[in-house]
Picture 1 (cartoon, rainbow, N blue to C red):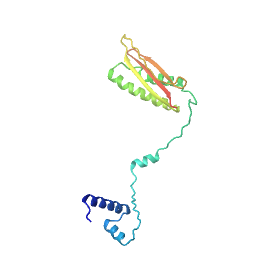
Picture 2 (cartoon, rainbow, N blue to C red):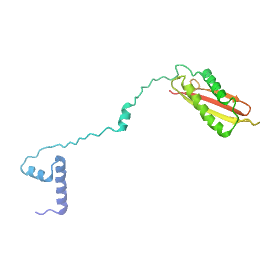
Picture 3 (cartoon, rainbow, N blue to C red):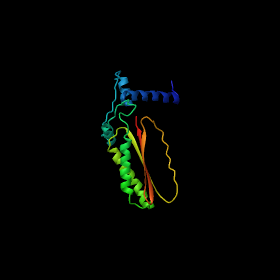
Picture 4 (cartoon, helix red, strand yellow):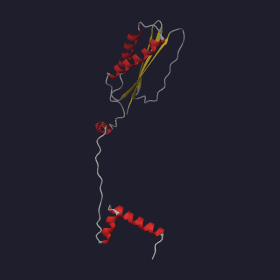
Length: 179
């Protein structure tokens, strides 16, 4: 009895599947099936990767538990921050004349100094935003506004305005409590 090519292909495919399941080659499978001794075998592959730098970093990070603390244990010290603002701004700008390039650098420097001094107060769980504006006094008016989305029970701000003969400065510190 002759088998069609399609039937031969299906039979060969099923034998190949069996050979791959038992992890024996086709020749070994045929030989063991003929002698009536088919053994169940299992192949395992194992390897070990070298630890990458990313794995070391993930092991070193500490995950903190939630405290479920919804409010600050003590409020942000607005009066102390007002004194810091006044001291820093007046010490940097007391004798300065308005020059655009100098004032651009001074805003960055003053805001970094204010932020560092407020962080030295070690007030936990508050995010600090420091904004400093410096402009020329030349018989003009200016209106500076800001909007923030926050909780009025725990979030607050501190502000100080400075003027000398040629410039004005406005320094703001926003303290937003992180729950």
